[in-house]
Image (tube, rainbow, N blue to C red; front, top):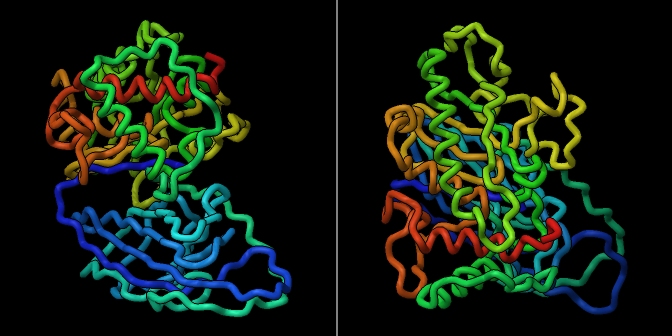
Length: 427
């Protein structure tokens, strides 16, 4: 369940369609018929010059399924999937196929799984109007069909090699562990809204208790340190002085979240240092320094942006095997700071954070770089609040646009993640 949430100001475009579904996996002849049916909702919460974000929800109206692939054709030349989450994406021409990953192939009756992607467009970005699921065209109705007797092996999906998104929505999962409340002492007025928030996670995060690449996991995998790589998605030049300011501002913002945990409920780290180990850029000449303090990756383009070396990235090697990383494990990066020219708003997930390069460099001396703080919250599992508000709360950093600093409610939502996940680290 790789995670991404995003914060944008553009209006949302929505398409809802039905999809006829045939369950598939390993099938054998059975006597009873299978009910099939599905609904797909395609939304575009953000669009900018040459790019957009799309979310796709798949609701299974028929019998439970164990694997799926979703196909559609973009209507306009130049539309393309650039990076995706919660599925493996393949595109030929304008035809796209999204295939489930290992954790979200099973969808119960009336269950929902969510996928999404950041895309590119040229002249226009119309919404696709036709989908097929497992080879059957969208109908919006439930049908009963006799199963076939042919055994079909389910595919083995591979991890998507792109930043991924928020836990997909589904029926409420069952916690894998019983969480001890020891040390949990929020103010009485926050108990109800905090419980509401966690219940919302349980009802909308597909692998809430089993996903293993939250920011929490990354901190512990690094023994209390986080490594970053900067994706400089801009044509602007960067001096050594500006580089060092960027590194320092990033570390200060990350520290604001880590300071929330110091001395709380068994948290073991007094500090969590941040080290920038690399920069990715289109043209080496943009980086106006000659020292070797960071690794530099030139013209390795992914999602139409410079990408730091995949063999060195935790997102691509969550088993901690960095044997293919030049320089070894000490040169690996846990997250990316993706700075994109002309971008408003941002995105965040287990892969790191993406915000506008002009916004970030224009706020290097600002105490609270609030969009970055918001996106860092997503890296540690915190959700958006676009469509609901917890009881008695109105203004906090994770409620986009309502606060410019981490509030008391943000702090306790953050600590609540530690309360529920600490047992996996032996605390």
